[in-house]
Amino acid sequence: MNFQEITKAIQTKKNYLCVGLDTDITKLPSHLQNNPDGVINFNKAIIEATIDYCVSYKINTAFYEARGSKGWEELEETFRLIPNSHFKIADAKRADIGNTSEQYARAFFETLKADAVTVSPYMGLDCLEPFFAYDNKFTIVLALTSNPGSIDFEQGDFGGKKLYESVIYKTAEKADKYKAMFVVGATKAETLGDIRKIIPEHYILVPGVGSQGGSLSAVSQFGMTDNIGLLVNNSRQIIYASQGEDFAEAAAKQAKLHAQEMAMFVKK
Image (cartoon, rainbow, N blue to C red):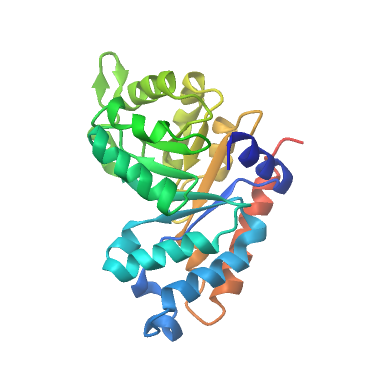
């Protein structure tokens, strides 16, 4: 999906919900725990239950990679289960020297056919260029995250700016709104107003609403643009809404509640 398509999907559905498929095998409902296809059955049911209430899915690759070759097969199958009507994010947080980043980009954009991949900008812009080389694909750059450790580096002083501000400035100079997005945690919603002065049109992926305590109202107030410009991710609160056989129904209920709340913020 390109910039126009994701924007149209948000405006049509009147929500900007991204469901996180951070599927932890130890948290599957008990009736799926010993099923060799438990992860896929779980993901399929979650996708089918929530598809009408979201515009995007974010798959955290660590939960699959930890399971070796079986996990990678589950990762590939999960991406195949998501229809092209929805924005597919590989949450991999990769980046390295150029020829390595080329392989990462191939893995996520070509093999998995993700619409976007999260990257760490720590090594510099040259490590992100192989991702930017893809048309109609998004590189989602970590900027200001929700975890307490973000104060260690991201919020440190860097030539008169916070490090995360420099990351956003420099990346936005290199990649426009059609190529780049940024991660800003929901618990840092008060900074979104200032961040919007730097990137008034780029999309921002916002994790941390729900279980991590972020406020959808604050995120929407400070971060929304005329084109909405937000993808708000919720993982655990939706996919683990129930540990019983009704897990899919419970997930649908939670996703619907989030979508209804978002509809109140979507500009007509």
